[in-house]
Image 1 (cartoon, rainbow, N blue to C red):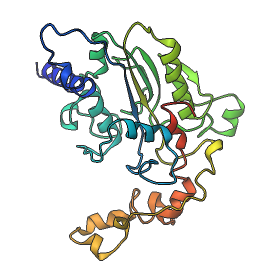
Image 2: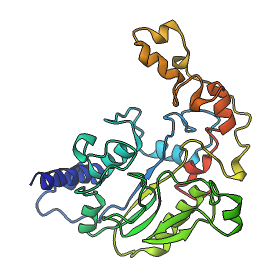
Image 3: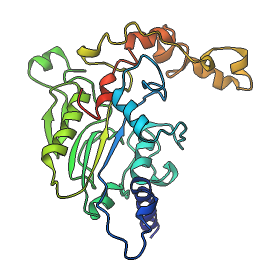
Length: 301
C-alpha cells in the first residue's frame, strides 16, 4: 500500500509538472483539449551560466531561443547533487530518501514507477534517448518507454573511445542498446542521440497519438570532448572565473577547514581532477565550453 501511495504521489507530481496546474481540475462540461506534446532535454553537468544568453561569447542559439520565448528559472535546488539520485527524482517525483537511489553505483530501481508509464496509460507514445545512469550494469529498456536508445554507465563521446587499437582494428565499437538490441556506435554521441530522437519524432511514431520524448545527453560531462568541427570554436574565448572562486579571506570567512580543503579535491577549484593545473588552464585544455552541439540539439547542428 505504501508503494502504491508513493507511485500515485509521483504520478500526481509528474502530471502537475508536465501538464500544468489545469490538467487535474477542469470545469464540468468544458471542451476536451488536444493533449500536449512534450520534450524534456537533460544536459549533464552544464554550468548554470554556460549559455549564450547569460555569458557573451558562447553560441547556444536554440537554448537562447527557449529562454527568450519561454520561461527561464534563475534558481533551482536539489535534495542530492549527484547524478543518479537526481535522475531518479526527475523520473519518479520522489526524493532520494523515498526512491532509494542514493549514489552513482548500483542502487536498485526495484518498485519504482517512472512517470512516463502514466503518460502511456493516458494514450501517449514515449521515447527515451540517452544516458540513464542509475547503476552501471545494464542499459536494458525500462518500463514506461515505447522507444529506447541508451548505453551503460557514463558512455563515451566517440565510438572508438576507451578501446584498444587491436579492438578498433577488429571492428569493435562502443555500443548502444536500441529497443533491447545491441547496435554499434557510428559517430559523436550527441549527434547520434539527436538523430535517433529526431528520426523517432519524424518517422518512428504513430502521429495520431500525443508524444513524450526524454532526451538525456552525456555532454558536457567531464572530460568533455568536442566533435572535430567545434574543436577550436572557443580557443580564443576569454574565460573569466567568478569572484566567489578566489581563495581569499572574504570568501573563506565562516567556512570550516574541511570545506576549504575541498578546493584541492577531485572537483576542487584549485587543481581539479588531481592535476597540477589551475582551473583556467584545465578549462582551456578540455575546452569545457566546447561542446556547443549539445546546445543546438533542439534542432540539428
